[in-house]
Image (cartoon, rainbow, N blue to C red; front, side, top):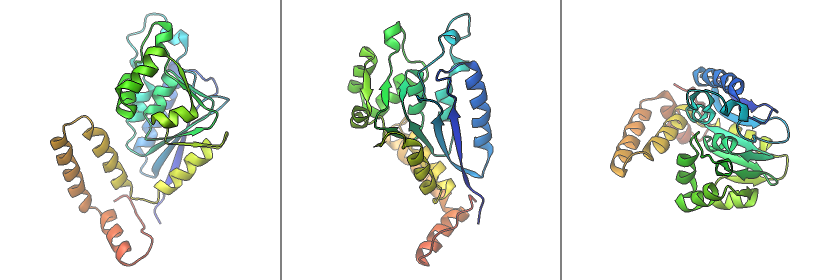
Length: 242
């Protein structure tokens, strides 16, 4: 059997994103991307909240833009499925980081806000781009222009989260989903992510061409042959990532 496992990336209980946190998680993300044994990732957090945003001290002073603080972009670059477990509050850059994941599971008492406007700012870690792609421009304007807070039920209705579970259960549910996802072929999962995410930035014709190209490439893999053979033999497939 191939070695495969789920990697958990954990935001610390400091609750605020600063340069040290981004540097540490960036190293761990780089390791995850290079490890072929990692087939799925769970993004979780310690403490009472998922993330309350950016440390104000990191935003002050003479820094060359927001580049060193862009954690959401680093999460989005993970080619493997990323499932986010949200408890407590996901505010501002914290919500931007959650939006960079593929699937979001929230506790029923979780809260959501992108309130940069409340301090005279605007999202800068992908919020103005990922949020409208997820929930549409009208609801995005509702959130960004008012800075208002959403509860878990409204976040589910908006489409910000995929599922709401009992308080304290988001982490467990995220790992259950990750376990289920790792039963599938990792190459197919990587191609699926590429087709969906890259296709959204292309017109329909280009997106269809990308889908066809990736599907063609997938046919030449051992995993694809194993998938077909296991189906015909009515047995559970054994994928190797080859």
